[in-house]
Length: 221
Image (tube, rainbow, N blue to C red; front, side, top):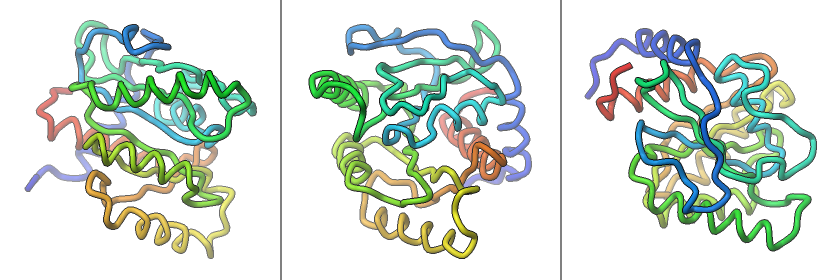
């Protein structure tokens, strides 16, 4: 059991994302992935769930990941380094949105195959953060993603988005609903975060969770 002061991890998480963070690689096919290196944490979610906005808030940037009102904007695996060049402790991976997207079925199939291959064959991938729209809770495409992650034995954690658009009286019910949906899933992390890219709520906790994950893997940062 870790004896690290949680406040220390909170500060380490803040400093981690206050440093260098930049785009390094894009892969549309599994054979186009960058060589494995630092620990990777990936972000997945239904199309238009607010993934790009959350990545921008997480890293304190305005345009690290492009935002768009058009579902399906992210069409490949996008890799970002976090930390000083040459000694970065981790990478962020922005995954293609799943579920509805304003593109062809053929393109969606290609993305799906890419995600399957990445999740099952990437030893440096430590966890997938699955973003779920906090206004609506779990939807069938989310549970399908959970099925894939469970079958891949890939650790994942749910991050609810758009907390600022949810009535305060509905927040606990939304959290309870997600927890119930994860209760018997073997690869799911039990903690569910509720975030807002607009107000910054929950972003510090997400950074802290990533810092804890890196520490558990023995990463120096």
